Amino acid sequence: MKRLHILFIIIFFSLNNLLAQKSPVISQKVRFGSSAETNDVMSQAYWDIWNSEVQARIDNDIEKYRKADAILKFEELPAGSEVKVEQVSHDFIFGAHIFNFNQLGTIERNQKYKDLYGTLFNSATIAFYWKPFEMQPGRLRFREEYWDTEEYWNQVEEPEKKPHWRRPATDPVVEFCESKGIRLHGHPITWSAPRFHPEWLFEQFCPANEKEKIDQLGHEGLRDLTNARIEELIPVYTKEINRLFRKRIVDLAGYYKGRIHSWDVVNESRSDFNFHKTSLTGDGICLAQRGKINLMPGDYTYHSFKLAENVFPNNVLLNINDNVLQDTNAYNAYINQIKDLVSHGCRIDIMGSQMHLFNPHQCLDIAEGKPIETPEIVWNKMETLSKAGLPIHLSEITITSPGDDERGREIQAIITRNLYRLWFSIEKMMGITWWNVVDGCGEPGEPTISGLFTRDMDPKPSFYVLNQLINEEWKTNLVLKVNEDGTATFRGFKGEYVVSWKDKNGNVQQSEFYLKKDGDGFQTFP
Image (cartoon, rainbow, N blue to C red; front, side, top):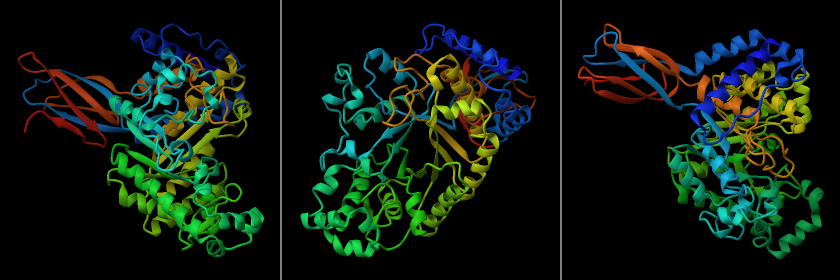
């Protein structure tokens, strides 16, 4: 009860601050927290799990891993002079996908959506799913056409039935993100999921005689063959599928070069590694474990990373991404895959891990205190993943508001606050990306009530929780006094800062610096 009351107070003051700032997203007071003051939201068993000792450990780890000591050195500034310190950006990534760019049906909704990027989110995941991105061979959807415009989407009655729903042309999205000064992340380049492969890949580039052989064998027949034997039966398609997968990587790198800061080079290939137990078999083609009759280039994860390293600029980060469930064997398989790829000379900069609570009953179970994404589970998972020695990007997260009623939305908000705090405290964590920002805007099969906003872009309690954490609790804004030795020091959240002060003539001076490690800062003299 006490913790619920504290949460209500935090969100109440956060909302008042938002209203005072006249946020572009919020224009009127939204009622929140009525049932959060009762035992009708989270059970005592939930709070026993997320107890004061757990919260204290989280606070300590945030202080340890997310902050650094800054030192500012001033010339001829008297002791006791005031120095204003304002954090303007985070080093940590707080992202979301931007798949619904200009697709929400009205100018007002679209503007509210776009206003989130650069205010709440400092990173955007941009859709490069192959099937909708290259509907015809060689016709890549970089540039905007009429059916990508806001005018077009505002007239569509059932947008989810369009083939490019959630898949906007990429140039307008890239240019928008650049105008906001936020990080851009491309997702994905190579993925074995057959539903995201263009139909023309097989239809146009597999010869009729090879199609006939595949049809005769069927899924089970192909499973009985070695990859080498499959290559003998379909040599032309083996050559073509390798060529086309390579071409896709080269096309994306050649077009955007270094404008997109990071890419999921390969998505969800752990099951194929786990089947072969190696990333480098030497096979020209393979039957992927995902789906039926799903032919992929042999050693596609290895070859994708090797080619990406060669064709992208060195400053572009190369990510691997996977959906690792609450299964120790799955965690270890993912670690083994990464280590194997690295041992074969692949450069992998960041490992992505997803966390989806797709079934709303999971959030109800969490509220009842059942062992789902508990602190111990998350700590153990992250300890295992950290063994890869790479920064961890929580690349896709889903938390639903079960029932989408008042209590369900508050359950979502409380789970969100506690998990974000925990994730933010993990040493190797470099970023968290919320998946579907708006209700009803997910992939078929994904929940319709996992957004931070309703379909009409009305904010849900989870939005206020994230805004309070990202823009208030985890921002450092101070007024310091200059010491006798001309220095001013503070410990703050890592990120970019603007510092202002008055010089000896009373003129306001300003300087910027980036706080990344202990000792960062600036001095006002040579």
